[in-house]
Length: 156
Ligand SMILES: [Zn+2]
Image (tube, rainbow, N blue to C red):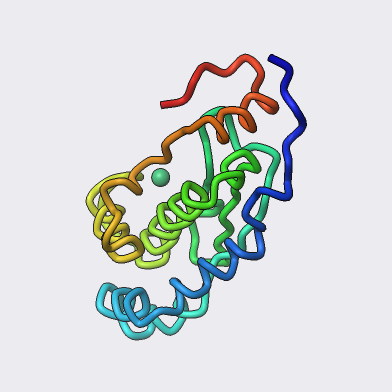
């Protein structure tokens, strides 16, 4: 089968992802959580630290998105172009990475995907936190991913 180039017109736009993240970050739900989890002085420093989103060709063979920086200064979330071909999986990745941002901003306990992360994920993805622990592949994503990672195995 010959692979056609990535059709960007079908992809969710990175500006749409940015708006999606901003809506959530500034929601009462997330702001109240951060307020409750931190000292009032610290909350004042983090309440406006909404992450900036960036699109990359790829963040890695199986990395749909990643949060850059482990301090409260200017959090950045990068998205692989191949996850943006599927709106639902892209939004799932956004909720997952936003939980990492909240985890860092509030300095929550536990490891990378540990207790604090899970607590934050229940706030950024109240109804879908189980599914949002990881992205899932489909034909559309595999097609786009294969263009950038021709030797990659099927992601699960
Ligand atoms: Zn993660």
